[in-house]
Image (tube, rainbow, N blue to C red; front, side, top):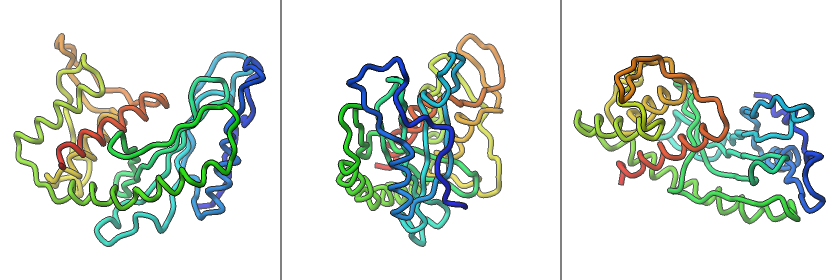
Length: 245
């Protein structure tokens, strides 16, 4: 993949913001990561209909590194750093670990199980990132250990139903049932890691049947919003980590 920089991000404060507001520039930070060997995998931006709002709103950037989290038992995935940011006051700068599963092209974000880095848009100094980057990257081994435990834990039918039921409520308390699918041959395993991945894929991407608490049947829609996407991903990881403990 070409190691390109981010486009269509303002990197300056929205005109409505006060003089005290200081942007944490996404492109500048991405360049710092690029110099460390990271590549930009994807950029998701919140759409806005407000005049002059394009590029200032909340956005999520996923970067990956070819060498981090590289181990024989995890050659099916790659480590990601996930950056959430905005220039209109709608969010802090946030940096956290995640990982990408090759077989389903699915990206996961870790939750409260591991440390995230948050910074307000006030007097930010780029050098402050160095310590935070070191702390986050230092958690790579812990993340690897958690994933290993997920892969080693075999789940019986009752445990799978329990996990699915808890996961559904993270998506919406108004959903009673989701017709979870096995989309590919590699997803037929009943270890926790595979169950977690296929549940996450269905709840995020949608396209599967669901039944509400009132008995209404409909097709689950894909989640595209930056906030809901990050929140659900984090909660699902924490849920899987709880089952792996």
